[in-house]
Image (cartoon, rainbow, N blue to C red; front, side, top):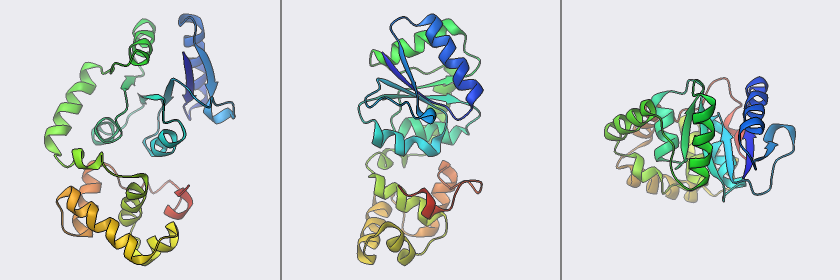
Length: 209
């Protein structure tokens, strides 16, 4: 079992490594932030909703497990519904159950604690648009983020090296998929769903890979 640790908190990352090394036979570890990442990990443990697009693009064959370090309910639901991650783990889970969660996901099953299952069911009922988001391409998601950050269509086109008609076509399809009519509704839906960019993160142009 090849496990890639992608945790921004260094102390947490080292603690997780120690637990896995001492309790999960046959596990091989690498650290995303130390530059020792696997090319093809089986599992990716991460803690940042903002990083998921890049991670999924880089490791398409992996299964993803999120550490819940206080994410909003809408953010967790978005990770589960929109990105299709394979599990969510709270930091107060005991070691035995933590290792069981990793084995469960590695076998191809989903791991959800009761509290996260309740969030998933509640948020899923409250936001029927999530199913449409699954069909979004990485570029669609980039455009949504740029729109919600306040950028005009021409600026988005320049930022993503696209033509203006292409950006408009993407937006038209996004509106249709989400059953909305304009940017204001898109921004409102994005705010409700936890898509809006964090003011503490880099500007939109700096986030595009």
